[in-house]
Structure formats: structure tokens, C-alpha cells
Image (cartoon, rainbow, N blue to C red):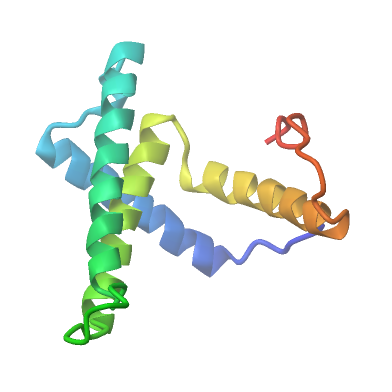
Length: 132
């Protein structure tokens, strides 16, 4: 699957990654100085943070079918999605991934997902994503 790189969009993604790195540095998370133990700690920190943000996103949607008082808080849902991006980008950075790395991996994984759909995805192939 051939994709033309949209320079303006990649510049935006790179800017987001740069802004997140600056914020993390300000908070005291220095990714370049991490050893594997630190990386494991921060991976778990970001996973936990994303789980909380997902819970907050869930609470933005009227998910309690038995409760009539709930409303869909679209504005807060958008904020929670952006919060998820902050932690997801931090997680990618802890793993040493740049905006370009994420883009390239996304393209490859997207192709795998299409191939799975084309084949009916009737069985799990543990090796179909190893090249990513």
C-alpha cells in the first residue's frame, strides 16, 4: 500500500511530539536518561494514566442504560481524547519512537489490518505483525 507523506501533517505530528517532550522534561521525565527499569516504570505509569483517561472518557458518554439523568458531554469527551494523546505520545517516546516512527508503524499495521479483513480474519497469525 503506497501512501504519499503529507509534509504539513507530519510537521504537525512532529510538533506534537516536540511539545510533549518539552512538557515531560518540565515535569521531570527525561526520556534520554532512562534505563530499562525506568522505561518499564514509565510504561506502567502511562498505561495507568491512559486507563484513567479512558474511564473519564467513558463517563462523558451516557453509558448507564438504567440511568435517565446522564447526558453526552461532547466537549469533555474531546478533552479526554486529547489527554489520551498526551499519554500515548509519551509512551511512544519512552519506547524511543519518533513521530516518523509512529507514522511508519501505523502504515504497516494498517496494511496488516486490511489484510486480516480481506482474509476474513478467521485465525490469529502471531507473525503477521512482527515486521512492524
